[in-house]
Image (cartoon, rainbow, N blue to C red):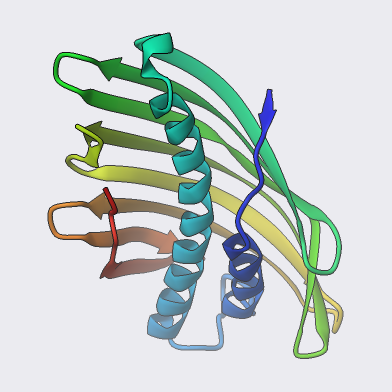
Length: 205
C-alpha cells in the first residue's frame, strides 16, 4: 500500500467547514443562499485536495504504461489537522490504457475519515469527527482530458465547539469537470440545503 501526502488545501477546507455549518441542521440562523454558497465553496476546496491525490495516482500509471494495459492500485494518505487529530483518505484505482487509441481511463472509490480533527477559528476550537464515501472517473486521450470528469462525495460529520455548541450535518454532492468549457460544476445538498455552483477549471494538458 502506498501512502500519499494530501495538499494543504485540505486544511483550508476543514477550517471553512466549521465556519460554514456553524449551526444545527434544523435552524441555520442564516439565509439558505448564504449557507449554500459557503458549503459549496468548502467542498470545492476539499475537491481540490482529492483531485491532487487522484492526479498523483494517474501520473504514476501514465509514467510507465508499457508495464501493463490494466492496473489495480490501493492507496491511502493522512493529513494532520491544524490543532490536532487527523484526516485519512483511503481508496482504490482501476486504470486502463489503450495503446491503439492512446486512451486512458481511471475509476476510483474510497473513504475519508476525520478523527478528532481540531482547529482554532476566532479564538474557538472546533473538533470534527466524520466519515464520507467518494468515487471518481477520469479519462484522457493522447494525454489530454476528454469528456466529463466526475467526482461524487457523500457523508456526514459531527462537530463540537469549545463554547459548548455542537451540531451534525450530512452532504451529498457531485462535481463535474468539463474540459470543453473549462468549468467545474457542483450540484447537491449540504445540511439539507440545495447547492449549485460553477467555477472556472484549468484542465491542463
